[in-house]
Image (cartoon, rainbow, N blue to C red; front, top):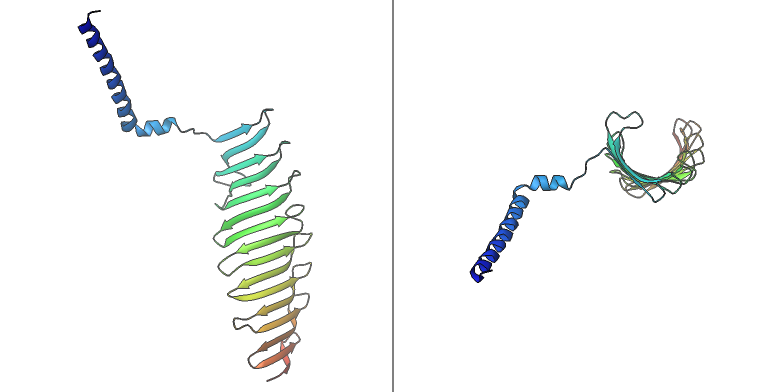
Length: 222
C-alpha cells in the first residue's frame, strides 16, 4: 500500500474509535434511567437454593394473618427447611425480627413501634417461660414470664421511680415495692383481687402503716 494511503487508513481507523467512544459516553450520560433500569431486577419473590436445590432464603412481598396490605418479609431456612430467622414488617407496619429453633418454636422476638422497642427471649416458644426488655418514654422495664407465658415479675424505672412488681399465677399484683421521686420507699401487699391489704411507707414526716381494704392508717410516727 502506498504510504500516504496507509497513513490515511490509520487516521480513519483512529477516528472511528474516537467516534465510537464518544457515542458510548453520550449514551451513558444521557440515558441514565435506562442504565439504572437495566441493573434493576423486579419481582414479587426471590428464592435462593443450595446445591441440593433446598430453599435457604426467601424474600417476598405478601400478606399473612389476615393482613390487607402486602408487606416485605425475609426468611432464612436451615438445612432441614425450617425457618430459623425472619425479618420484615407486620400488618401494622411494625418492623420485627424473629428467631426460632429447629422445631419452629420462637426463641427471640424484637420489634419497635410508637410505644417503644421490645426484645423477648423465649424457652419453648411464646407460650413458655421468657424474659422481656422494653424501652419507652416512661423508662425501661424488665419482665419475667412463667411456664404459662404469664408475667410474674416486673422491674421498671418509670419517671425516675424504680418499681418491683410481683404477680401471682393469675396475673394479679400481690406485692409492690416502689421509690418515689424523692427516694422514699413504700411496700404494698395485695389480696387475690389485686387490692391493697397492707401498705408500709416512709416519707419526710416519718413511717406509716395502712391496713385493710379501706386503706385505714393504723400507725404512723412523726
